[in-house]
Every structure is written in C-alpha cells, then in structure tokens.
Length: 636
Ligand code: ADP
Ligand code: MG
Image 1 (tube, helix red, strand yellow):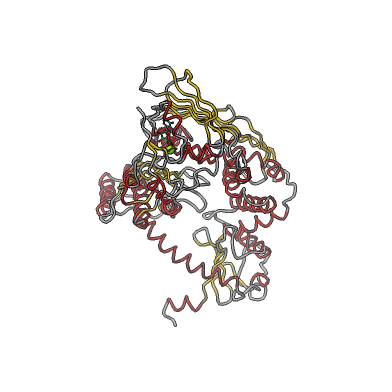
Image 2 (cartoon, rainbow, N blue to C red):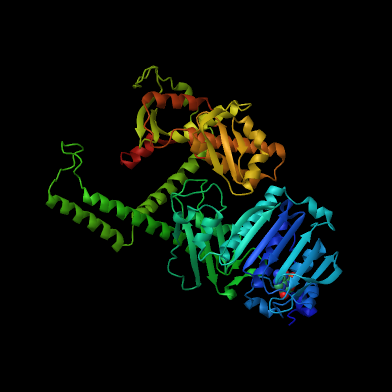
C-alpha cells in the first residue's frame, strides 16, 4: 500500500532546490495541491493570524499509511515522480517531494492521516519538529489528512521579519484560495480566519457559478463566455473561460485569473494582453474580470522555471499574448454587435416617425412603405457588417488607432510643454472680459474663445495658434490642486443616505487600518459586518457612487503600496485619493459649457502649477499652429 519512493540522489540533485516556503501563502498552496492530488472533494483551511501562527488544512482525500506518514517529511520523498524525465509529463501539481520537508524544517507540524481505502478505523498521528519525529501514535480519526503547521519560522526568526502585515498576508491567501476554487469548482472549499468563515464555496457545476459564489451573486450575469479566435497553426493551445462585459469594471486586477493546464499562474504580460483587449472599452485605471484557462501541450511550456511553480514560460509567449488580446476583442465585439442588433430591431419598429412637424430635417416617411424601406436599409446595413466580419467595435478600433497616433503626437507635445517652447505668457495675456460673451478684441484680449468642440474641448484662437483644452483634464487639475492645498482636517458632510459598501475580505482591514487618514479627508467610516462598511460622511461634491468607488480604489492602492515607508505611503495615498476625487467631481467630456464656464475654467487653470498635464499625466492642452493648418489646406 506504500506509494512513496525516495528519489535516487543523482536524480534528486537534478532538481533545483528552490525556496518553497517564503510566506504563509506558499505553504497554503503546497498543502492545497497535496490535498487535491490526494483526490479530496472537501478541503477546509483554518488560519490564525493570517497563517503566521497556525495553518491547518483538513481534507477527505486518499490519506497515508503509517509508513508514508513517516516518510513524507523526508526531502525528495514523493509518490508522484520517479525520475527527472517524468517532469516532462507529470500531470499532478506537486512533483518534487520537497514541500513537506521544507515546511517541516521551519515550523512545528502535526499530521493526522488515515487511508481512505482501509476499513481499519485507526489512523496515524505524527508530531514533527525541527526536522525529526517528536511523537508518533495510532489514533482514531476520519479518513483523509489533517495537517497543522504552527509557529511558522520559529527556527528562522529572520524570515519572520520579512512577513508583511496580517491583512496583506491574508489577502494573498484569499487570492490563492479563490484561484483554487476557480480551477476546482467541483471541490468544496472552506476558509476560516481566526474562527470566522471567509470563504464557503460548496461544489458547483461550472466556473460562472463559482464566480458568483466568491464575489457577487450578480457577477455571473455580467460575464461573457470567452470566444477564442482561430488557433494559431504554429503553436497550438486552447483557451476557455469568461470575461466581464464592457460595463463592468474593477479598480484593480483582483478578478483576473489565468490558468495554464488548470494551474494558477502569475504572468504580467498575459494579464496585460487581457487588459489590452479592453483598450478603448474601459477607461484608464479600470480593470475587467477575466477567468481564462489555457490548455497547452506540456512540452510547449516550462512550468519548472519558478521554484513555487507560479510562473510558466511559454516557448512562444508572443503568440499566446496576441491570441488572448485578439480573443478578448472578438468576445467583446460579438457582445456589442449583439447588443446593437437589438437596438436596431427596436428602432426598425418605430423608424423616423419622431418629427411630424419637420423637426430635425429627417424626412417623415410615415407610411408602411417607408417603414419597410427603412427596415430594408437597416437590415442591409446589418448584413454588410456581418458579411465582412466588422462591427461598430471595429470602427471603434479604427478610431482607437487614430487616437493612438493622436496621443503619440500629444505625447511629444506634452514633452515639449516641459520645454519653454510653449508660450506660457498666454494665460497672463488672456484678459477675459467679465461679460458672458467673449468677443475678439485685440485691446483687451490676447486670445479668443471660439467655443466648444465635441462638448469636450475648449477651442481658443491665440495669435498664430489654435489651442485646445481638454475640459475634463483641465478641471481635474484645478480641483486637485485646490483640494490638496486645503488638505488638513477637512469637514465631511453627512450623507443623506449613508452608503454601505461590500469589500472583498482583507480589503476591509486595509481600509480600517487607515481610518484616521480617511477621517482627515472628511470620510467617516464604520464597519457594520464581516465585509461591510458604512460611509457616514463624505467630502463635499462627491456623490454616493463616487465615494464608494473611491474606497474600493483606495483599498487596492493600499494593498499595492503598503511596503512604502509610512510617510511616503501617506503622501502617495493622499495624492491618489485627491486625484480620484478631482476626477469624479470634474466636468466630464460631453458636458456642454457656457462661455462663462469656459472662461472660468481657463483662468483657473492658469493659476495651477502643473497646468499642462492632468492628474493622470495626460495633457490638458494641445495646440496646432497656423502653419500646419495651412499646410494641410495646401496653402503653403
Ligand atoms: P510532492 O507533493 O511533491 O510529492 P510533498 O512534500 O508535498 O511532495 O508531499 C510528499 C508526499 O506526501 C506526497 O507525494 C504524497 O504521497 C504525500 N502527501 C502529502 N500530503 C498529502 C495529503 N494531503 N493526502 C495524501 N497524501 C499526501
Ligand atoms: Mg506537494
């Protein structure tokens, strides 16, 4: 019944000894993999102090014989491999026989295990400390394995120092357990922290239901079936999964999970490729949800590059990234097309009857015949779309491509803004009249507001230049500098309807840790549940939705920047929060402005320090000189 063999030393040596155990999450990962390898269908994980004090995992898998229970702590003891050649083909998770040995070397381990095949009611209990068996006894226990890791790093106190705050360590574990839940939806997972249940995810039949279980019961409605594009002939692999609709977004990458051969991987390039698929769909700083499973022949990847097996090296990474981005685009495209065709059918039922008295100059056909003409036209339009595989989104891409060149050139301009080539006296010379209408008047005004373009840009004629100001970017800059100035002790206003927000477990702790800070910003928070906060006061100008987004945004930011020194961290958080608040409160692209508002905006912008870039680093101002305009008209 024994399954474990010791690898011959020459084989063992071939396997690079890696750091398996760095933090609690690494241990949890190894133990969860072992439980899944053992065929468990129910796995419970108990943590104390984010795993620093205790990690216990109970599974109902195959269990171990007394001999195996003793052997499993020996380095390179494994039931899953006999030689290095097996590394190429191994399908199970663990494959180096190193995990338990490494873990037992830095902690106090108690193993209780009983074979699930034996009818014997008794199992084995082994206490293993500092590399040797302390105690061994026969005990009555359920089938499966129950392993407890206590006092992590008690033998290596230096490593203990490198552990992050509980909230951060716990977050890493939660993300990890989420990943295991997604890749093993048929397994019942439970995660307890300090006796509180954080995750309880009974077995489900599909990944979509799993997402609903883990995050939000409405999330499964917002997920689209991922449709991969044609496989690449030179590098074959398959992709399945779900991505979120364009209307859904997160402030971080916490709902992006990539799996290769059902193994969770962290691959920033692939993650970027997924996000790239949402270019021009989601605004900057917003992230989609995406659960993608890539299946690839094991000979086409190297999973052993990373000691913790978190990284996968594709032989041809470029192809995978390109296929992923293109597939995301295609999925969104199909979704948008289907949405639009819905709109079109609705339209075709009531075509052009809206202006009986002339209205906007559309001909009032008003007859059945007219109706069918319209319908015919629209159907034709629709079929041209489908016949050449294009859609409004494709038009979006063309625009995106154009705007890429645009932003490239504005990037160059942004650079030149920092050089003294831009006439900074422009603002000083702009003596806008106090009337509502600004007219050309060479005595009083050096520049003239022409008006608004696309309800987004303010156009100004100034000497030999046409100047465009992005109204949102400009207003953002103004509000940001204003609010940063009056930073100390801001009074919040009581919210008419206190906003309740639900945060992923872990994030709530991050926010509460900075409660003082939020207090200073006029944001009063209170915890009202395991994952709920109530916001009682908010800075003026921010509506409920914005303040809610702000908190979600801040949690992700805190998580990512916690390692910074306190002072720098506070400063960064402060800037981050103010830029977000400014962004929310600023006029939007599409807001129609009066001349007075435009004038105020320009004069206020003139007073700011960094008037040429918005808080996100985009330019606020762009200009074209007369020469370039005339060149385009072939006047020169
Ligand atoms: P590996 O998983 O790479 O083989 P480990 O050190 O993680 O190495 O585990 C050593 C061996 O202990 C495994 O090969 C397996 O036979 C046994 N084992 C570990 N955990 C369990 C478990 N939860 N249930 C059954 N057997 C286990
Ligand atoms: Mg293992």
